[in-house]
Image (tube, rainbow, N blue to C red; front, side, top):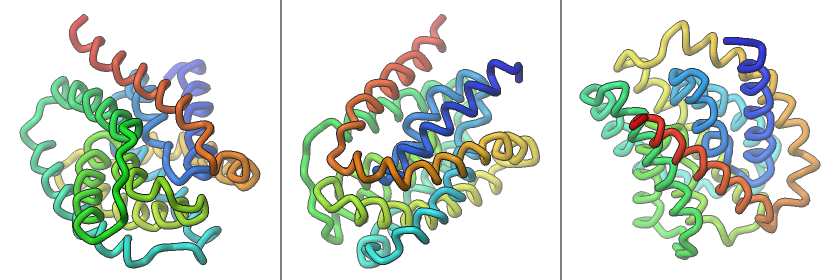
Length: 238
């Protein structure tokens, strides 16, 4: 990577980590469509692994507000979604995968903007977990399905519960990627490039979380993600 590309990675991951540390999700949604233009192998493995580090820190910071019941049933769905994504990664070519990632990113944005309300009951949690496993393993944007379920909860509950879910889910997804040959030494190197920004973003999110619980930053983040997702798709036809 050139110096300019490294700087883009550093800033993108920094803002993504601040967002996820503030609202409970957003790292993959913001970073994936940008980093994939620099090196497609940033997605999904390195983003998932760096997000694992971030979620460990977030779970510890806001551990008193976690909804363990919700995590339990969402993880049932996550397992199913991850297995389905693993099978898809075996049969889909690299170009098709990039195109699918663009479509999945736009789908995630649409879900977040839909305005639909789903209460965190058992069937809803299982379905949300399944969709999150599929989107998260393929495109590192597993947040929107779970965010829909918890969008009306208090900020601390959203951040802690989604972080606990992501912690377990991303470990599962990274393991699945390693099993199908989509995560190795090169992906670990890319992860190491991202980690300093993850740690700084987490530290800064302690202060920004106070101001974003009302969701004011979401429209801007989703607009950027949607635009980048479209760019990824268009690029495959140029």
